Amino acid sequence: MELKEAAQKLGVHYQTAYRWIRAGQLKAYKVGNTYQVTSEDLLDCLSKRNCPIAPPSGIKVRNWEHQASRLKEYLLSGNEAGARALILKVAEGGTEIIAASENLISPVFRELGEMWSTGKITIASEHRATAICERALACMMQNLRGRPRGIAVIGTPPGDQHSLPTSMATAALRSQRWLVHHIGTQVPPEDFIFIAKEVAATLIVVTLTHTPALDQANQIETLAKTQGIRSLVGAPGMTIRTLVELANARPIVDNSIAAIP
Ligand code: B12
Image 1 (cartoon, rainbow, N blue to C red):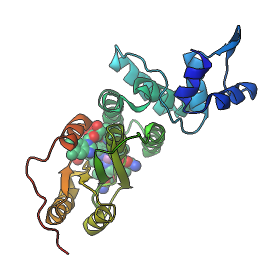
Image 2: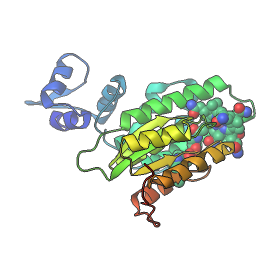
Image 3: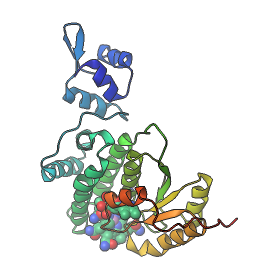
Image 4: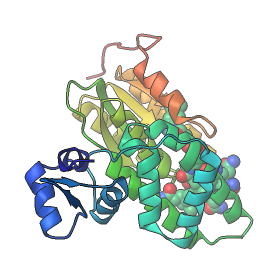
């Protein structure tokens, strides 16, 4: 591709990309008066830089199972650059985050969960894999221009330490033009509501992976209702696609009842 296109995909000005070539940070070939950059070199540059802003050119995934097994290998060997480049590539830099979550990240983590529960991998390997995926997802979280669909607050209730689903939900909703406040794990119900009111949230998303925390999730839902804020509570087995569909759909019940002062 031409340097102009590469710069666009890197999310930088043409002159910046040119400077990177001069500095040896981006590989390019001079053809006549122009510079050409290959997709591989673009990805290499993206994975070396901390947080790419714009999408690299995507690939059409024919065999998700094959890609999932590659991701598993990268995660188990701690090959962060490989895992990140693969996730960014199949997720088309963030635009296909839903497909990447469902077909790539979730199946791999289900497998890692099995390996962990049967003692085939240690908790250290699991933590490393989770951290690698969270950083890859962070690289895809672009702030899309234009009017947001709404303002969402995403987190887990007290008792649920699983953070990756909150990151996936955040990346997915941001890719759908939601303005998301990602508040992480184990947030007390009152604080969930406090921040939701503070940022004038129109939606609260409670991710639930550890089912004993359901009571706390229900409390958040109840409190949200009293404040007239729509809420969605996840459950193991529910998908990111369902979340996006529910979030983007108009609320079936209008719960915009008078807020308690
Ligand atoms: C990583 C991990 C951990 C890490 C978490 C680290 C971290 N920083 O996140 C740690 C080590 C802390 C951990 C702890 C535990 N874990 Co754990 N963990 C996992 C693992 C391997 C991955 C979790 C994950 O990130 N999943 C992400 C994806 C893969 O899950 P998903 O369901 O597809 O997520 C989707 C939905 O949540 C959806 N979604 C999100 N939000 C919303 C909202 C709405 C409205 C909708 C519709 C959808 C939606 O989008 C997500 C992405 O597609 C899973 C394995 C698994 N099958 O998931 C076990 C797993 C969830 N853990 C399990 C267990 C048992 C535990 C512990 C109880 C172990 C223990 N004895 O201490 C503790 C509980 C801790 C707690 N109180 O929360 C079990 C749960 C079994 C069960 N049926 O409840 C699993 C399934 C492993 C297993 N096979 O046994 N865990």
